[in-house]
Image 1 (cartoon, rainbow, N blue to C red):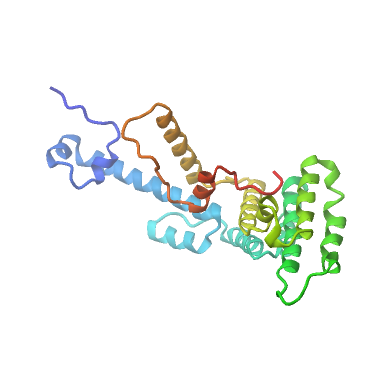
Image 2 (cartoon, helix red, strand yellow; image 1 turned 120 degrees about the horizontal axis):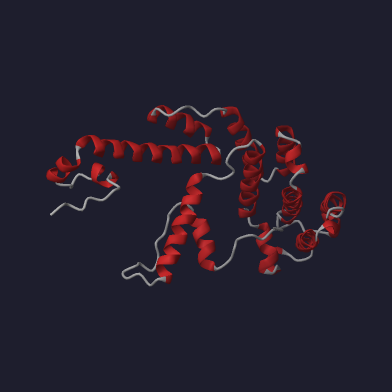
Length: 267
C-alpha cells in the first residue's frame, strides 16, 4: 500500500521526532529544501515587520544574522521613527513639521489624517492645562490657548464634514468637565493610546506616499488567522479552545474582548 505523504513536508524536515525511515523515503534533499524555504519566508516576514513598523537598528542586525539584504533606505525608516516618537511624546507640532518636511503632499492629500493630527494637538494642549498641580486651580482663562488653536486650525475644517464637527465638539467638551467627572466617551480622548493610533496612521500614510506596503505582512496573516478561527467556530469544530490568543498585541486583544473598536477619534 502506498504511503500517503503530505504535500507540505516542512514540519517533517524540522521536527526531530520524525522516524528516519520516513525521512529516507521522502529524501533528505527535499526535506532540507522545504525547511530552508520555511525559514526564508519566516525571516522575510520578520524583516518586513521591522521595516514597516520602524525598527531600523533591529532590521540591520537581523539582516546581518540571517544573511538578508540590508533595508534599502535606513534613513527613511529613522525619519518615520522620529515622527512616531514625537507623536508618542505628545509633541504634535514637531510631528506635523517633520511630516511636511518628509512630503508636503501627505497631509494635503489626506484631510482626515491632517484633522486627526490637529485634533490630537488640541487634546495635548488641553491635557497640559488639566495636568496642572492640584494646588493650582484651573480658571477659564487657562483654556485660551486651546480655544485659539481650535478656532484657527479646527473650526474652519469642521463644516466640511459632520464627523469633523462631532469630533471637535467632543474635544472641546474636555474643557467643561473636570477629569474625575468626565463621561467615558470624553475621558477616552485623554487616553495616550490615541497617540499610538495616530502615529500608526501617519506611518502608513508615509509608506503609501513612498509606494511601499502600508502594513506589515504579519498583520494581514494575523487577520487571516482570526478569520479562520471565526470560520472554525461557526462550523462548530470539536475540541476548539474557548480562546486562542495570538500574543502579538495584548492591548488590541483587550479592546477586542471589550467589544469596542478602540477608536475614540474621528474616523
